[in-house]
Length: 248
Image (cartoon, rainbow, N blue to C red):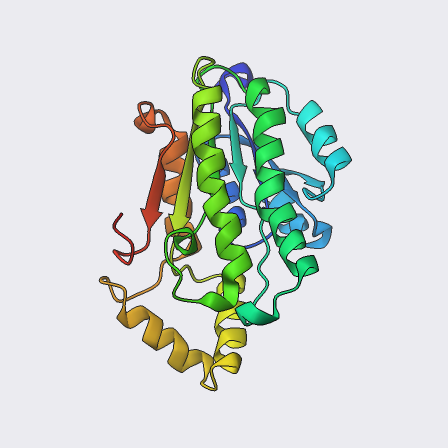
């Protein structure tokens, strides 16, 4: 492949979880990948796999704008950076709420706004939402769920705003994916509910028709599909990746 024909991608939240799996999958697909995260130490593993890396706090406006200015002519943007605050809904503070919204929703809006018009025609954006955007079964993550619902609206708005470029904008809504964030969720919610993480995990998976969680690599495969030309007629969609848990 000629270097000028090589697809270029920026992936946020790339140091761990789904973001890391996406960065590695894009490298496998022949893309030049800029892996972005706040955790510079953990980005080193991606550098060893052929990614360019950069420490960026996506919650910081100046750092977001500097990132956007440096990725002119890229093809793909995957907004995977996110945080979660786990606590009973009636104990959530304004500070907790604002921090979650800033990282999970505000950053995605403004990265789409700043990077979207810089992507090459035919490019694509995938925003990481969650099954929590459609289900309210775990009120311990109400702020997280609200931010992930906001991402669906952001995705729809930018799918219209960037359609004439054309740049496609879709969201993916993962359910139970075996990541460090998932482990944190299980441990903390189990503590609130006076049960064990293992028992809570088993209970949750009973509600999944496929009776299991997904790997981060499986989710990365679905994201690659949304970025690829195989999904060239898809934009503004929120794709469930939940093993059947959510089907609307």
